[in-house]
Amino acid sequence: MNTQHHRRQMTSLIQREFWEHKFASFWVPIIILAISLLVWLRFNLGSASFLVDQLANLALLPAAEARAQATLLVAMPTLPFASSLLIVIPIYLLMCLYEDRKTGSYLFWYSMPVSNTKTVLSKLITAALLMPGISLLIYLALCLGIIFLCTLTLLLHGEPLTAIGILLASLSRWSVQLFLLMIYLAFWLLPLYGWLLLISAFARSVPVFWAIGLLLMLALAERVILSSSYFSTWLSSRGLPYSEIFNNYTNLFAAMPWYEMSYGLLLGSILLAGAIMMRRFPD
Image (cartoon, rainbow, N blue to C red; front, side):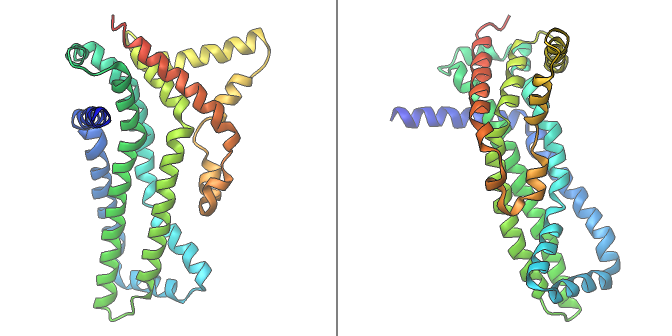
């Protein structure tokens, strides 16, 4: 019973985050879907014969080459969604606790039987899983819509649907990869998420300047005092692992530097604990 109560509390907190940040969580990927679909319609349905030729050529390729080509086609729409998340998530994390403090809404939650730990964790889950998860579902809807339009185009031209099967198979594999990548990045980027939440709980004004400025000051202090650049090198290594993601997407988890994950999780947990403690001192 106690476990169910905690689960309901956490679910309610995450739902609150979704409704309070619905534009960033839901409408931004919806807008990207609409724009991407309009662009696709503009460049493909305007010359249906070219689209039919592309799909026919895909069906004629050797199996391995066809899978690789189809994977590239279904992966391309992920770029605008991923780019938006790189902007939306840091802004959300920097502002969520800061806005709670500035608007005084934290006082309402203090009157409720909700701990600071649950509040901070709900914001972390929203940024690390909910926002990417919604974008992933909307991306899938976009891809399925495009594949449906491709199917109609082939049927109207009396062409076989071999390429559609290849696209669907590639989409299913790529979707699994994206889901696993989302889980991986939730852990890999924990130090970044923890840092942004700590600054959001700490900053009295302009959190973005605190978040960037303190890191620059630490890197500069190390360079001046110790004549080294270990901190800045480590910061760059904790960014998104682009090379592993794009060069090893077929075997993503085997390519990741798991040995770096452990101390990243430790540091991220310490920063999250700091954010939870700082929330106790809203003034």
